[in-house]
Length: 139
Image (cartoon, rainbow, N blue to C red; front, side, top):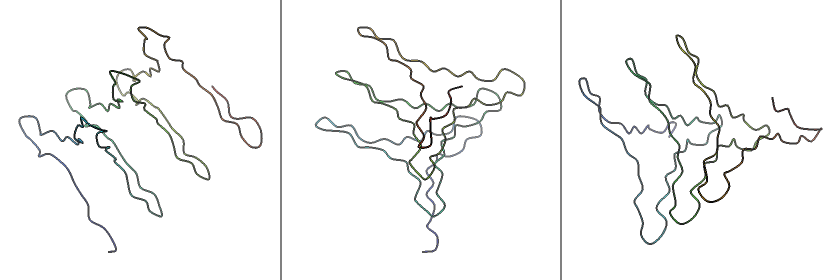
């Protein structure tokens, strides 16, 4: 086919109450690993974006996006990796708060959690090494 169809997963709209919730979940497993959930845009000659956008609000704070790894009661909790893919030139990663039109802009907090028994985690900021000399700067 010249073009594939679209798939839309949405709850209905509401005019005087809350609209419905959409939950995507794999089942739990007592004997092995639970299923993985993958959200992926398709490959193409021009690439494809995967967007996660929280809802806007006209009367309260806008919606939030939360990425949280799974906990473990017996060993290390899961990790969160935010990475751009390898390429002829790799893509940038930007962590930016929005511009404020009438109040303060949002803050940016980078911290490790406390440790009840062992040492708390470290924060490392480092630049890569270039083939033609030292890497970039940490400003």
